[in-house]
Image (cartoon, rainbow, N blue to C red):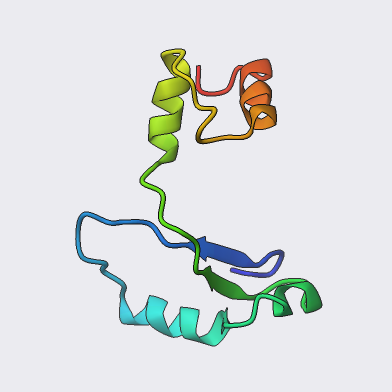
Length: 91
């Protein structure tokens, strides 16, 4: 449900064909917007598919990297890394 927020969806490379039910397709169609400015004009209820560059990364990869003390500076802002470490997330 979109009673409290919008959804902004970024594309992600999938290794398998996308499977979306007809019910989900219909639900998306009733909420989708093409202009991101409408997100600021409406308090909730919209779905926006952002056309962003594809980066081959996942939260799982970030969690594993941080857990093993590998640098993630090329993936996350330092403030986010510090927050994760301060709050002992992913450990």
